[in-house]
Length: 231
Image (cartoon, rainbow, N blue to C red):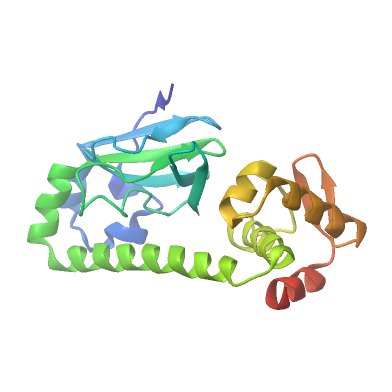
């Protein structure tokens, strides 16, 4: 079960500039009165597909995966969301139910803001409304861009892409704890689990990475980037 935290004040939040810089102090105080922060542990479900959309979700800390499950119970990962991402924006203004599920892949803190006051401010504040539209477009573009990038690569290139993504965009360092299982990586980049394991082993033998359980260290960044580009 998620842990409900003492809610911080939006006006003092370090992340205010990400979306809320065009709101007045009064508007921020109004939203803050409808906000709840919850902490989720790794593996906990945040949203299930077809849950009603009642709040706007903002990932303040951690990592989550957005995914759908097909009729054969196979999971298809749509995207990995990191801090400063608005994980509910893909459906929040177009549907009344979530079209995907969201699960924490490491300990995460999610801000919930009731949709009714948020929509009231969107109607009155044009600059804020435009900023929200820009965020929705960017999220959609990023997801489509990543999917196209992955699908255009061969198997080694796909593994290189995901390792570089976690190293350069998520953890900003060459050594990190891989937050996904081998099966989840396979679901994300549309490969078999066996191929994921095989190619990671090849990268290890070629002295491109070190592997210690779920810990990955990239020791030949240039080689990995070449595989990502040409593989």
